[in-house]
Image 1 (cartoon, protein in one colour):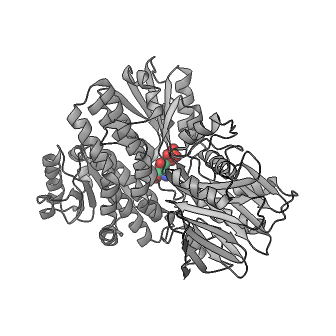
Image 2: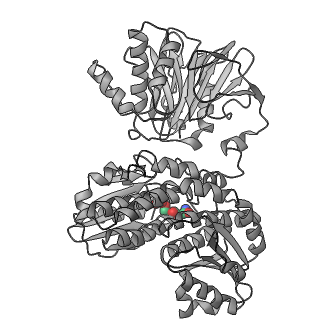
Image 3: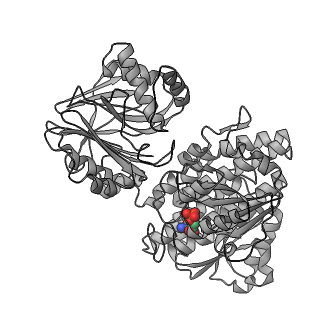
Length: 611
Ligand code: AGP
């Protein structure tokens, strides 16, 4: 996701654009820039937050009545001054900002390079911009027509805002798959990824639809489709306040990010998983495949929720790839004198890519000559940069302190990684490989179905919010999810919670069970189901309160549990991605019931960049 802002009218454009960018930083914040149009184009951009840009350009010529701005969340090309938007065309007359992914940019880049175009950045945006200019100059048509022709050739998602030095009061905008709102003022117009940049100026907005193109001037808004047919703009009145808009209408970033998971998991799989073709395309793995195939051992280092992803990956990789996996808390690994042999691979998992313990653990491993594979969410982060290869989770900025959508993105990447290696090693049958690809492809839809029943978890949360302790139990692939559920409840509601392998209860923890203790079972239908039913009975026999996350169609556990929540049927390797969702919602609703600031729980930071 990136944030885009535009203004054209009688006011100074820069203050409106830079303030709007600050409100959109929740959409991305690794680099930022503005283009101002007054007596030619002035473009200022740099790596870093909006405030860094603002400081860097104090004293520059910022006068203009038309301007656009962009705050980036890198997907193509790591955060840098040259990869920051706006980009300018070869002629220097056009400037453009873009939110989205141009999937066929490589082909377009090849064609333009053959024509002699030289690119300064690694972005798909610069390619699209020069593709538009090339059409404008070769077809001798106006910019609007060139945009229309170009966008008919483009595949992927985009919102673009374009300035032309030869038309100082005009902004051309178009969208497909990414949001664009146009604010209608008196003799002025505002543009944004959402309405937050324009709220104090106007509440009259036009939501631009896919395949529509807008020509925006101070006193004119023309809307057309790509067939050049005019569309009457439909003006609606906003009834949201600023705070709500940044959270997309959700009460908290955490809830917004939980509900984003169908699309973030889809984004993580997109361009990589093709179940019909039976392929998984991940260049970071392909370029390290020999290391993975011949690895004696994979050592996973991570912290917190990312460590739970690593633990689940151990179960999946050992099952599918038959490679020994060790999972290490990065904070422990970095201080003990670990044995790292030649041929070991270190897989580092981190949402932020900046966790100090994980970073140092990697550096220790590198000293022993290990290959580092990084699975991170923040493009260009420290862990991404020091790894020999890696894969991004593409979950977009995760603002809530509790990791939710990044976690399911990690699970999706790790599952694809295991499948790809197992296929290459021949340790998985064609049938199981194909089944799991289709199962993985179906996850976003199943997560959507689960989210439709979110209110059921609110009821359960309200029922148990007074508990002082809780247990989370699971077996096999569900054990890491039990640990994750316990962590979520701890960090979001401050209720003490522990996760355990369900069979471990009889080795001590069952002494805790009484008629006040809620025990959450992750008990989806799998090869352990019979065993976990017995574990539930052990708890019930001691009057414990059982909350069970079970598979649709399970007609055994509902008769013994106090509360149940159903998730769709899925292969036992895939099911943990589904049973994670009720864990997230249970902690969220419990935290809300207890009046916790769930986006910023006490004592916690989003990224632990210190020891
Ligand atoms: C997860 O909900 C926590 N906020 C925390 O455990 C987090 O997972 C941990 O600090 C690791 O962070 P990272 O993934 O950015 O490395």
